[in-house]
Image (tube, rainbow, N blue to C red):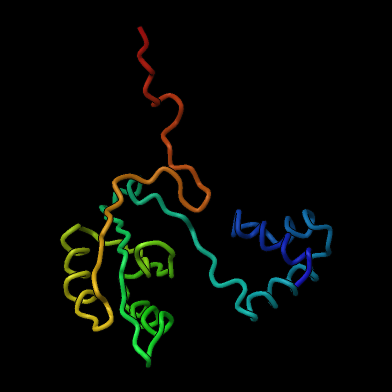
Length: 163
């Protein structure tokens, strides 16, 4: 991997819909070379997925996001990777990370209701033998995600009141 690969990745990370022609112009390579590099990066698993960032509130879809933190008890037979791999198989799990601090793992989920999130934790996560305890944080509002601002336009901003 070289600096041109990194430039291509930065462009795709910012806008996955960038055309190969535009990327070629931005990184000063020919189109065939950019196509070849992108294909190689896909084959190597560096590029995992192309995706859209959706504002589900604007789409009119009721969604509840939650960050669920877990304390886990490791055994001689299993480590964090084993537990994370098992939890990652649940379709409700969008993201799972090993974190520092008071808890060990963080799971991000999106469901249609708080009740569904609660059921997921109670019925699928808490019963796992290695899970000692859970803490669920419900997302009340998203202001920025994956570098994209979700603020309302300037016209809708609340004016400050001063004496």
